[in-house]
Image 1: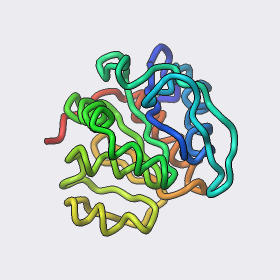
Image 2: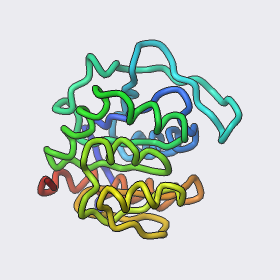
Image 3: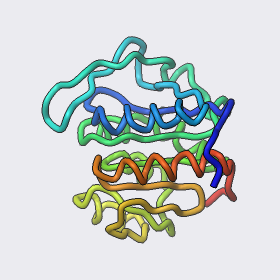
Length: 186
């Protein structure tokens, strides 16, 4: 199994309300494996992380959605958090950004409520995936084959349910980034 992603650039798409551990742990895994993570968000400055419903730390935005181009990245990570997931799916720039990764067959990793934007992007039909349990109906109605498993990989799409799944999620994320592009799913 490949364990390094030297020189690979990974976009983390998030905004206020992101579940901090679901941003921080994959971010560190990307760094530890030799990759370069960048936080992409709606506007410059910082975003507010949360530990469930409690405010946590702020994180500096590296690029805004107006500046970022999917072509500049090798992979995408979509952390969870209910507010984060809802805000991201409601932003058309975010939906287009995510759709570009899917169209190009680039690895995409999603955890918890991060999958809402994949639904908006029309990217889950025919895909086997998991999520926070309350998203099961959303994903199945959008055509996904939802399963209750720690981590699921389907043609470059890595999905997990919750913070307790982060060890498996991070390992599979690095593995998929190391493998590179997959056949685009339409």
